[in-house]
Image (cartoon, rainbow, N blue to C red; front, side, top):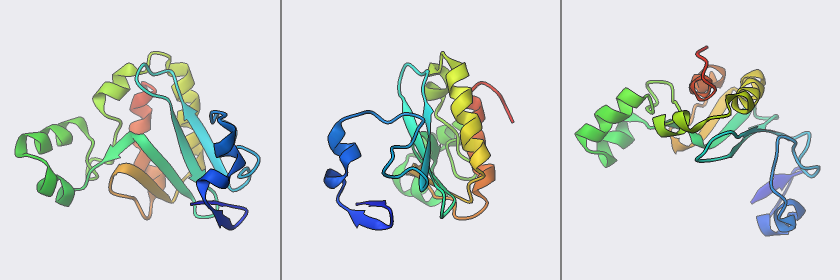
Length: 154
């Protein structure tokens, strides 16, 4: 479901999805004002649009940031994999980072820095990640791993 203008509707009914036009830094008209977005590009491996829902102050990440919780890691990953996850910083306790292969794949860091600055200026209260635990409060401190994507520490 997509919620635009306060009205839920199936994704297939949204003109943005039907148009086949790719998303960019600018939110499409149907959700502009409700959802902002930042386009992380310059990587050999992926382009990612990070979304920000203004009303709930929630940033939404797909693959760029990973923050696996200890309970999930203990249940699903082998001990050597958990040690590797902690070393790479892709655990919730480490604050969540982009995986090393993604960090190294950003050759055009200028574009990544532009997106990073936009995301950090949102001051998100909550952060939703596709790979890991969600941050339900204090989300503005969470995406420090984005700085590493852009090649700069905060």
